[in-house]
Length: 468
Image 1 (tube, helix red, strand yellow):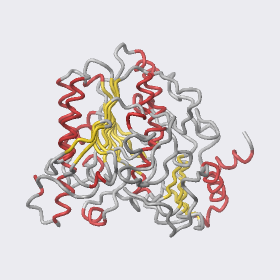
Image 2 (tube, rainbow, N blue to C red):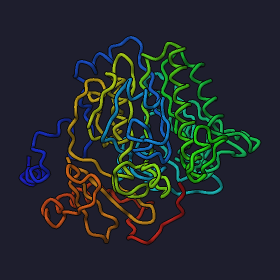
Image 3 (cartoon, rainbow, N blue to C red):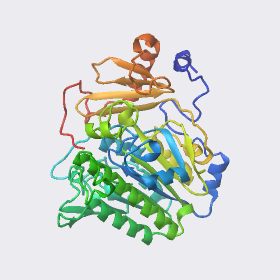
Image 4 (cartoon, rainbow, N blue to C red):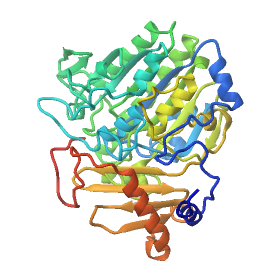
């Protein structure tokens, strides 16, 4: 180990032995495959199904098990009681398309092909390039059926990034993020077929129904199911206000709460279906959100991002830290919490470890497997977490242990926070820890690989058209 690296780890307060399983770039070597419970998971005769439920703009504090007091989420709260609740899980970044890119590819945004929302006419976003390896490809290689129901946003129909090119056997929902703003659309997509609608059908309910049908049809084979809900992203639309009809809140806030409770009910229906099909103990279900909330009203009334600063499109905890629940009866201990720091780009190597399926030799991941955290309750140490975003300006953040650095533009000073004492990121201590700030600046520079599609734009300047 070089003296520079030793000094960096000492400054970060982590020590030289804190980072098993990681190379210089952070690429995984499948940490945790030799642990006893992980091996047991791989040795089971029936391979587990995996379901990833992803909300859209749901804040860390928007569900009961993360402290929400006003919005009712009984099914997700039960999921937490029956499984595992992570307290330091992070999105890939803080806006829709790139955070989903990190989830699908196992790459942090400094290496990922999609680094912002960018709309392409007539319908869709900048596509994942041809040859991109996704978590859906991983499951297909292992013999799984794969499907996605919800919002895609990573390549229009017929493009290199369309769902059918990215490993999904079945897709139903919105291809385009802008179209997904309307919960009463005039069309959705089934694979490459445009499905005309009457503009009076609530899309969340329709998509959920198709998802339930697919699960029933594939109950006899292992499957990977990705369900990126559009709730509670604007527009705030819902068939009825339910339990919130008589609240004294502004009407949009009643709709916001009713949308989340409706989504929670869908999760409950899914758990009931898994039990009915006797798949409950064969299925790992993960629930999360693509980034934090940003609606000023919900942040004030519901404290949607919990105690954290910032929201969507920022590098602060309110934009990046997300709820993360995991449930797998008989495998994940019930009613547990875990403080492992992990991010969306760890999902691919975690699934690889779960399946015992190595990545192709030409595929690299910036993540590591968090399977030991899920199955054994271990707190997994890592070298760093890295984020960036190109929404109007190039911003970056890195976390090393409890130290969090934020740069709000290439021409802006580095901010430094000690999350162990200041998880609200209220006190910038960069001037007091100049050596550490310099080391974290160098780490940001190392992890950002320039991409001509996503220029390092100074604050206040925009490149291309972005949508969420």
